Image (cartoon, rainbow over all chains, first blue to last red; front, side):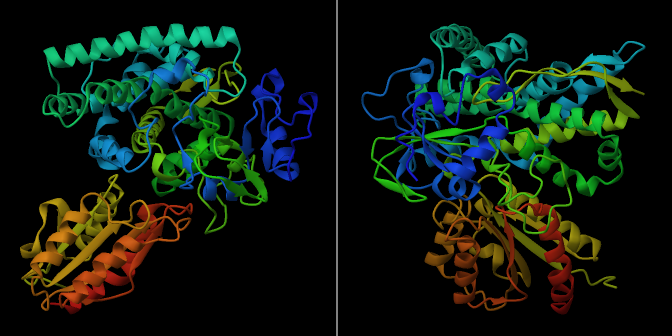
Length: 399
Length: 158
């Protein structure tokens, strides 16, 4: 099916429509049924939305991270030599610089810092036990685990995460001039903070990945660009995505207390509960590739040089794979395919272990201290057309 | 049970992102719960002498890229292939981590198991496999496999 004749006013993906941004899933359902490989009239790129196609083609060797000559530059174009700009085999070598710092075992250790911060926040609660859980129980505790992994100071991340949101909006499909400008401003702050942490680590190295990378750079095994851009990706971009999942868990526990009880009483179920949270809370809803060689998906010919956006969030709710896909369910049949929230192929999220470790440690610490959780107001979400996030989760922690 | 007759099982893991290390820990727990001693050895710290003189070992590795061995298993494999130690005294069980959306699903463990057999070792039990493309947690899969395969085979080695 080729949708080239579709007029912009009939688009199946109204990227800027506030109701689409708030809940794109009805549009995704229609897209998978009517045009699973869709030539988007608004962006000129192809949109792939079925689970089976995202799994198979999202890692296809005909695809590249490198934008063809002539692709317009955007706020993210300053990245030159990092895991988000290069393909294997160079990508593999660079990625291996980080792997040993972000194993499940190592990240479980870092996440003890997340748990400690949750305990501190709960110790400090007022008599009503009310907190804003996104920042206080998810984002900042999660950030402390990342700081431990990297060996950097903890300061500056509340502002950093707020600015990171402005950067992420610029990865969307239909970005306004104002949104682009906000992203450039945000990068100015974030890059300056990264320079600060780098300078601090050179002056006073702490145990962690950054000191090791500085040594490797001095030895000629990494470039300054790889060092700086790699630090940026881990320090700035990673934690809000993990915090979205963690906060989703807290909201679930407040709305459906039976899952909070299950988390407490059945530790062996925690991995399954967490996986279902990650499926439903797809923080980065899509990823992009460019076509290096002509490719055909579902009968649609996609030419060399084209841009493809793979809708991970759509794949994660594909009824061909997940029965009752919008529901939180931990009784899915054995052999159900795994969610794709961390991406697919060589570029799968290098921070997935620390994301899961943060969420587990935080939810464990909350479960240890709280008899129940209640919403203390309506959650506020801040989704754009590519990233999903909380802005506020008012929560009452009942002790 | 095994009073005074504890067997020492070596558990070697090769990994790219650390998941095999988690499997090694879980498999060691199963062996220890059954009264066996288990020593976990990362493949980057192992060589031929690690296996020569060992009665029973568990080999764990993921598969990387298009069917290749992961970062820490490749040098171990290459060292064994070049030194060719006599492993005729070794019995081993094998567990692989992979992703069935790749045609090369589980290649890594098959490559290593084939090499050990080529060097004279005997594999016991079915090769265990965890599929990252399915929802079953790794801990559940490797623990079930270890409980089904290991205590009996390790005890039989004593």
